[in-house]
Image 1: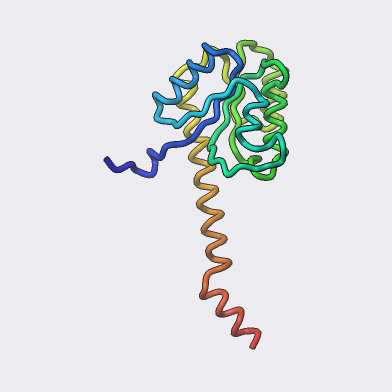
Image 2 (image 1 turned 90 degrees about the horizontal axis):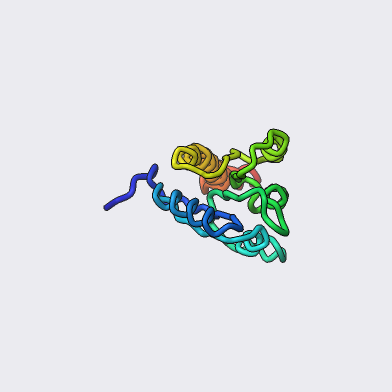
Length: 164
């Protein structure tokens, strides 16, 4: 079976300290054909990404979904660390929480979160992720095309000839 470009397996990093919630989000994501890596804390998410010791991993994560309330490091703290990272700042981050606190939701969205989901997360919520993934994929394709044009042999040859 050949996968169409729109059916590409996206890799999602799911972060939640509660086993039941983590298993639920993992199942919903896998049902929607996402590749999932699930961890139980913001610290482990940073370790997975290689951000906790400045040893940047070559990790291909397309989206991060994290619980807000976790011991040690909140989802908001994780969001800030990701957005401060030059390697991962463009990765969409989605925050989820059982608490419907407007000031918390606004703070996360203003801090760079793409979405804020109320728990329990449902399949309809997971369906809202694809546009964020597609937007990022299209941005990466456009960046690659622009880089290809800059360093294409024809353009380089023309510049070299101008120097002679």
